[in-house]
Length: 176
Image (cartoon, rainbow, N blue to C red; front, side, top):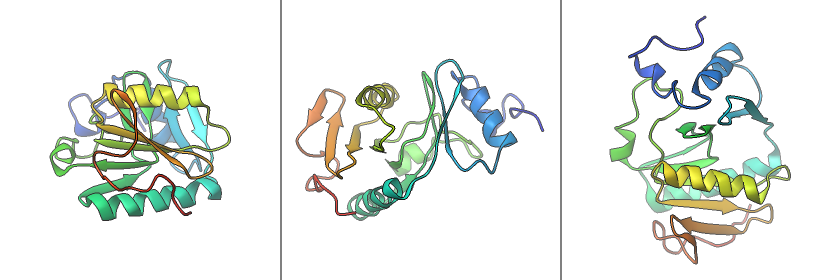
């Protein structure tokens, strides 16, 4: 099986982005790998195992975001960034942006308006800072970080904000 789709096809969208070819090859050659697969700017794979303490808050945030925003809410949504493929734990993307995602794309060249990262024991603040930067660089309007204690921090492109502008009233701590 080829590592990437032929140039010009929808599935090849973003394959030329940093780490894009390595990511496409990994998900196609290892379809049953039980990890979240991301890449860095050098095309190296970053594998994160799923853990129950991560999955429950991820589901809770996803449910609450859907109740508040509707439209398209997803989890484990792969996006191309300037430094590899990243996979936010939860996203919200408007119908307008969703329409810009090429049919058949395995990783979206369009960054959703909202990207949420749920921290686990292996995540660092520096890693979250970098992901925030990349999501905002790609056009995200907000990034939320959920701590291991389930506190929710909200960010816009200018920095940390007290409350989400997309979903005013979203809890600053979730019950998971």
